[in-house]
Length: 206
Image (cartoon, rainbow, N blue to C red; front, top):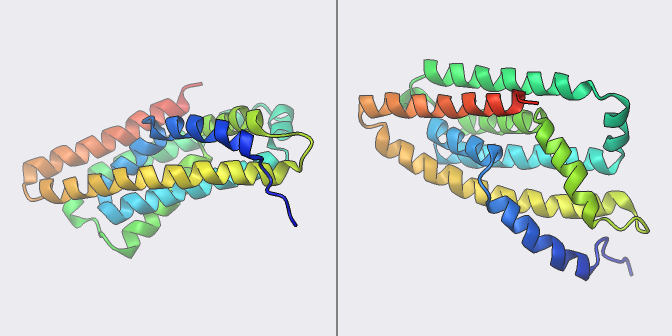
């Protein structure tokens, strides 16, 4: 019989702490909010899925020894930070230039939102630092490391996806109501772009 990678006592400590973190508004939640406002509820859910996918990629790399790579190449964080900030600024500019009523709400918007969510998550050094600082606190070094990272990281990803999806869906419903009036549409577009710009500043800040 194959033993579960993480013991019950660890899960009892991990789940409440992680739930509190997931429910705390952060950059990823704001990103799902902005995508929901910009592309509708489906785009908000897709953005949440992209964020979760990016998080699992980071967790997998961390379980394989990302910490050692970061220690060997500390300058990599700077490059990642500026790439992420530039991409968010590009999203802000694109949002300002594209009327929300003209943004497709189907598969195209969802695919773009998923891609953007994954890229933004992977290019945020804060996510890497969080994974390297938080998950190891619950890892038993006497057991296989990677399976523990995958289980714990998967729980964070699934919980975060559910919460951010709810935020994205709510934002999408709000966007449907507001885009019926041109003035409100412009205000909503500026609000969405401002969120992307604020996230760019957060990512660029060392």
